[in-house]
Length: 126
Image 1 (tube, rainbow, N blue to C red):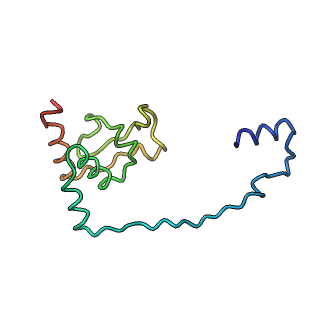
Image 2: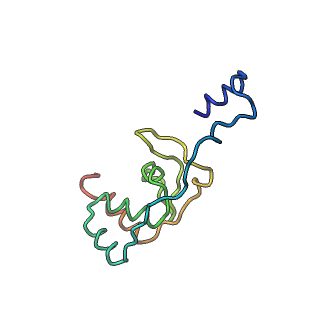
Image 3: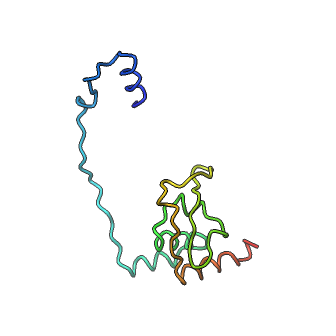
């Protein structure tokens, strides 16, 4: 719609002082209420997850990576105690990260490293 509006301005079909969004009523109030889990409940859920989902959850929770960044990782990206983010994976497509700041390396905790190594060495990955 933004392109249609811009084209309307460019072709002078829409006056420059006209903003169609002035006529739109919106609300920014959300009825969403986050569900806060106690650490014990989070741990119970984590223990029910199987590989590789549990590794992915641990990766996201301990690094703050976006899901597309985590899915874009390769084994070579995890080295020297760091996770080097250089790509994303969305809708079956490998691409750039969302921002330049996303390419900063993030620490890989010893526990996460242990889970990643266990997953990498699992028989289904050999």
